[in-house]
Each structure stands twice: as structure tokens, then as C-alpha cells.
Image 1 (cartoon, helix red, strand yellow):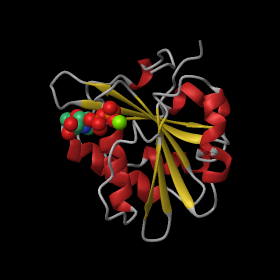
Image 2 (cartoon, protein in one colour):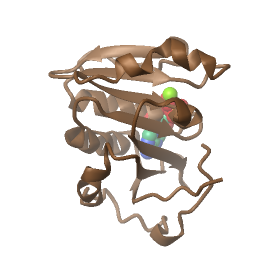
Image 3 (cartoon, protein in one colour):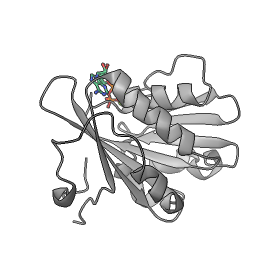
Image 4 (cartoon, protein in one colour):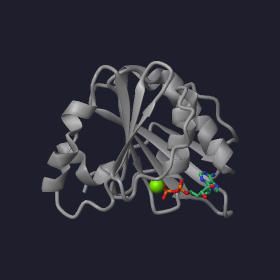
Length: 180
Ligand SMILES: Nc1ncnc2c1ncn2[C@@H]1O[C@H](COP(=O)(O)OP(=O)(O)O)[C@@H](O)[C@H]1O
Ligand SMILES: [Mg+2]
């Protein structure tokens, strides 16, 4: 099992806090980007996507695509694709999602549980791993880039304003399993 080496770890204490981080990341995103969201049920993957989509100008409510698998929203300039692959029973079903067609130069794609299909993803991505913190509304968001697509933005990711001093996280000791 490979380790999960986050380049940045951010603590939030509310859904709005997670959405503010998502909005910052939306500000760094560009056409053709892929983001993979991982973390347990209720960790905040959909909440993150709501903040991300709003920041890109999506005005319709973003809801969980758990049953629909894929939703599409019009942003101000880009289309936002929101997928949840939790219910995919077989990797063959990934083909039916048409990921290669979705990830195009007019859209940004976010995939909940995308780490489960990482081998089938069409390119590099930004992975956001959400874990529960001590309090009921505490979360830690760990970011890492996979492949080249986001690697040129690592400096910008490192420069993101922390909402709180993330004193619960140990930047040197965040090697963990990479399954979420
Ligand atoms: N810091 C936080 N970040 C994200 N969500 C939070 C936070 N604190 C509380 N929540 C709540 O946790 C729930 C997360 O649900 P959801 O985003 O649907 O999770 P997931 O998509 O990961 O299953 C929401 O009810 C949200 O309001
Ligand atoms: Mg969800």
C-alpha cells in the first residue's frame, strides 16, 4: 500500500468552513480539472462540492449524486460535473460514466469516492481527503496532487490561508493508507 502524503492539511470547524476551503480551491481550478474527494460517509464531500460549485457560479442547489451517479451544473464559465461512485458495483461500470468525455476543456469534474477508481481516471487530479476531527463539526482536509495536472499549483495550494492553525494535524506524520 502506498502512503498518502498530503502536501497541505487544513482544519475546519463547520460545513461553511469546508465550503470556504472549497471556494479557494475553485479559485485555483481551471477547465479540464479533476478533483477526487475521499472520506467516510458524512465527512463532507458533498458539502465541499457545494462550496466549490457556488464559487464557480452554480446557482442551482447541488445535491448528493449518490443515486444518480452523475450530476451536471452550469457555472458562470465552466460546467461542473459532480459524480459519486460509491455505488458502482463493478469497475466495468466506470466505463459507462464516460469519464474521458466528461473531463473536457469546458468543465471541472469532482468525483466522490474517486480514489476507489483511481486506476480508471483519465488523468492527474487533486485529491482531497476529509477526515473527522474531535468535535462533531471538526474536519481535516488533506490535499495532495496526483500526476502533473495540479502539480504546477502546489505553491498556490501551500499558500492557501489556513482557517485555523491546524494544530491537530502533524504535517510530518501524515503517512497513512491511501484507501478512504
Ligand atoms: N467541518 C465540516 N465540513 C463539512 N461538513 C460538515 C462539517 N461540519 C459538519 N458538517 C456536516 O456534515 C455533513 C456532511 O455531509 P455530506 O457533505 O453529505 O458528506 P459526504 O458527501 O462526505 O457523505 C453535512 O450535514 C454537513 O453540514
Ligand atoms: Mg456525498
